[in-house]
Length: 242
Image (cartoon, rainbow, N blue to C red; front, side, top):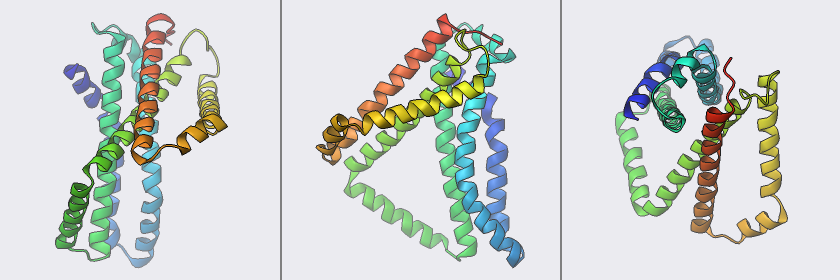
């Protein structure tokens, strides 16, 4: 499993490295450029934050599709490992890149603020100390928030993998991108209607903070397991390689 994860990270790092490098370079260079360009790039970097987050998930989708269902997929699927190990290693790899992306985004913002707003390292360390102190006061709530964020991200990645795998089965032979995107959006809308129904809305409204976090984590885990099992089943039984 560790070897699979190693090769997964090595095989996908090029997709992310250029994006991270350009973003950090702009964050470092923007304060030293002429005022007009400085103001333009500062605004552009704020917009780029959302663009980079979106690009990370686009890269996750593209890498999974290319490594599993195009010509390189023949090599991937002939490895002496199970489909469960393959999909699990890709999920963990995607999760790692997601966390790295958010760290890079935070680092770039910190550099930009230090250079433009004249923040010192002391200011940054004071902020970190205050943050750590706040975490120490509410460790349970912080842990719940982290678990909720982790399981939510994994559920989203697992849903991407299931959708991509489904459109590469014998059930879908044409317009795979259109059917995949459309089906995913319809699935989100259906889930939204279900969660907004009177039954779920009343139940969720009755939960307090801790219970709500536990319920959220439970639902995420159910989706992770369901999409994971569905993806591996489709790969083993219904896959149609290009």
